[in-house]
Image (cartoon, rainbow, N blue to C red; front, side, top):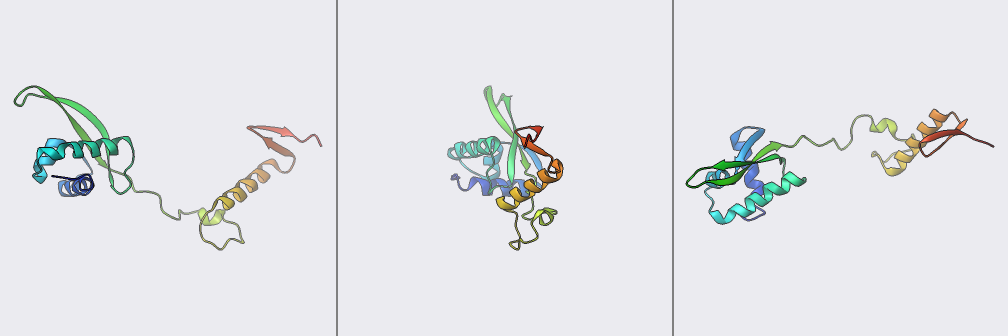
Length: 144
């Protein structure tokens, strides 16, 4: 029986052994591939639904689409199949160009909220040239 914490590892193994970045899978196909009993079906379907509705950060795959399919084996039933795809790689920790946005006195090597405020202030000053002030989304002249 597959426990909830085993399903992400099994899914990664299943996708790596299939050799595809995108694959339609049913819970029954997943169970028979790993020779799991029927008691593991709720854990598998629950995990697949979970990565459909939101990210599961320790798993590099996600469910892009869920379709209901009618099968006739041995009686008519409706089952779900899941389109499992590999998530795109995340952003780099220090993307190119961030170091140019840092202040000259900054030696910490990463972009903080203070650096963002400083950059935003610098952009506003350049845009307004000191003759305009920005209030909300409108530009208005200073009356002083």
